Length: 447
Image 1 (cartoon, one colour):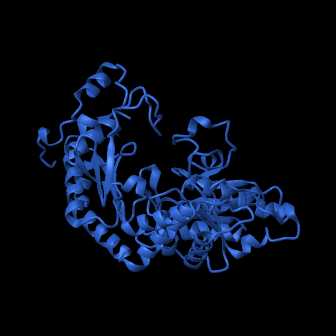
Image 2: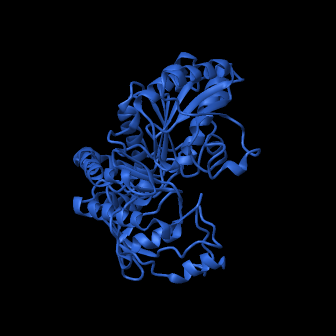
Image 3: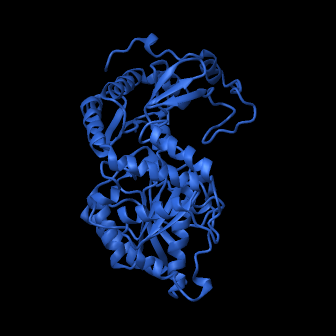
């Protein structure tokens, strides 16, 4: 194991550790009213209070400055406060913050839809805007079901999804998440049951998957998958060969393919979109998170011309009846257009390649570390899976004491930094991960 000095990462607030040990309620955070996501508020450690951001750094209320290792759930691909995006947001806010897209359009939405169509499913594809990745998935599922309804196949209303999947926290999105081993499993019975499968990886599994699809094709509207990395599942990775096989089989049986690239899109896996490493183009594509460079909420659902043709009709009942209040939000679209301009003018994919090399060089050695079951690295993502579950609150405090912000998922410590991170800053993150792993008994609990 890598040597560690306890004082290098001492948790600042010992009271939280005492409370956890004695099963006592933890003191409230600085707000009595804020309800945090994915958090048991009664037992959670006190959250870090961030007052400002800059580049890849978070400044805390107590004066500490942390290198952010996860880019605010993988959104801040250009780093925080990028002046080009900030300027675009300010200019748009001064001109026109928002107008509804009911009988009205605006330049930013028109421009962004054209640009996204051209770089994804083709210039004739159609782009539907919403305000979050979860809603983008809801729209995709709705499109797939209504596509078949408009074509007279009214029984095709179910979806094939995969173990380990996470597609969001709204009802339809939850229904296509992992049904047994996810944060949404206790909603079983409330959600519509879908057809979960393991992601096939061998010829035998491909044949079994095809048999499964063939038997249910008449009731299946589509298959939904996160290409290459199931990010929220702890960065589970699967192969291009698996994706190609899944898509080929589904296409053979007339099943629409939905690619959820809310988390994997915009360079995270090494290509601009993860599906571009495969032999297929999806029928429907979901985007979000880094779409605006992590600055403001915006998401998009993109459909091929063939899918859209089922909605383009003289029959008003064939229209897609969906309309978030802030769909095509002008400030969000301005931020997204500015983000795309940065991808066009800056070497972001080359930076991802450099990040990957640094992660490989520093973290592959952890495959032999005590308590580590697997190291996975792809693009600008590295995941170290541990045998034991990690206490998230203690882990955050331990990393903060080393000058970095890292928030593990379950039993996985991961890095997914901004693409603009410097090599020294990234190596600092890697060193912090190694020191953290050297003290595993302090921050893990049995699964």
